[in-house]
Length: 244
Image (tube, rainbow, N blue to C red; front, side):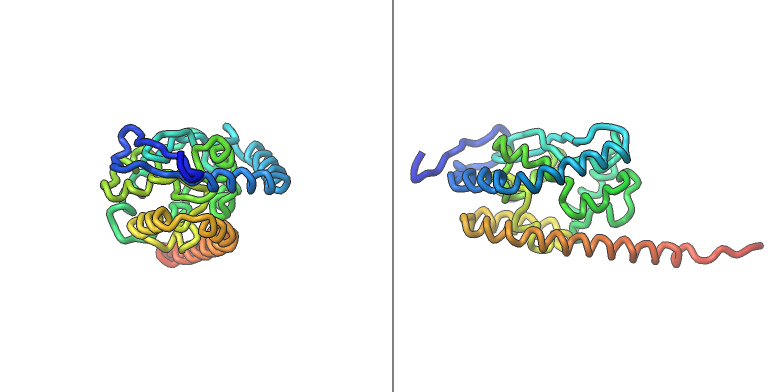
């Protein structure tokens, strides 16, 4: 170790060609902020868990394998916002479309996803469904700030230059999340992640964290407006029913 930094060698199958360096301040910042936020966050998490238990059968937490630092796999935690045991093929198709086009990175939520449980849409739009990932941060799988962790079938489609985004630990929030997120394309997301890695600093992490709540508020408003617009368009497209 040098200058208060830790080195980590390549993970198997990461497709990276250089040693990655994680600054020690990043881990210190993560732990310190979690401890400070815990008195507020813990009651919120308990309330969300109770709501999920009441409105939907199945586990409260959703666990999914993700790809993180240097291409390493880890189990990521979220609050379950979809019916248990739902089919993921529709998400795979949606993701493949986003990766191969210049379409904005909109979630399927705005188009009306029948898999989502009651109260699931506001939880997802607000980012509250990702609060259990604080467990991943404490375990060292993630950081508060960094690129989002992707699923294995997404990682398999990455080009070599896109895999450079795995040269830092994934995060709960990041430069992409506070830079328009749902209004950006897949390639723009990758470039924002690479920009973060190139310019990573304590001050940049703090700025991103401070911008996260305003960005989530904007995201919630946009999600609500898009769902309202879709609800208005649907009846207009179907047209009035004419009695024969």
